[in-house]
Length: 152
Length: 176
Image (tube, rainbow over all chains, first blue to last red; front, side, top):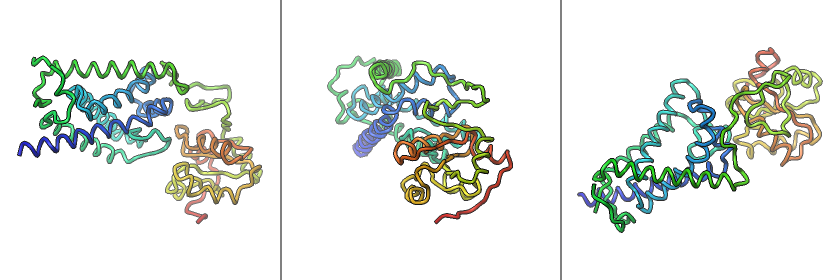
């Protein structure tokens, strides 16, 4: 039983990692458009928008990459879980406001308006996957195995 | 074997901070050297110019925004083609009377009709829903740069301003 759980956790780990890697590409190549999308959420103060647009896609990429190869995967997963929570809150706020915005999840294409509810639900699934990994990933095929860690 | 849940939270936090630090360093570095770099702190406040137009933050020098009165004058001159950049559903629910549909999002499906119906030297006004939408501006850039249309304007404030001015509209799909 446990073995199946850890196999699923491994599959999820790789899938979730790839999702985040993929999601970062378009944002990395179009920082100005991504900044515009963050602006559209109307949550962050103006002076923080650009620095978020500069750093966030790279944090997504590195977290995704580390999750796939299993390097510092605890940290990578923690970041991904935190990001998913932040994304869900940001989308939720705009659902409540009644604003239908382009989420900027996988593309920064202008006017690529997605249904906010389906974005929210997709994030919930990713979140569930992340939790599964948290509980059942056994560090199979993970670089973390080769790293000596203090067991504190 | 070590599960992530067995890590001490302090440990997870340390790893997370390390990744965030790497992300920020790489992001900042790339933004320093990239040709697409953006300002560290953006100007996201709206700025009015002398005509009362709030230049959108995605505004570029070659864009030609026009105010509603200019658009009305062009409409009444009868030789201007109005192009609706919104989604087909929006167009169906109501658009500037006589406007052609060219949704920015479904450009490839509609451009052939525009190519065959609109001569390259015809004055064109693109519009989308309101002040905050940018599809009309992006559409204008594509029409200018890729399709070779020479005289392109974008209606500032879009369809919303048109409705406010109580100018003629129509519903449904004349095309297709």
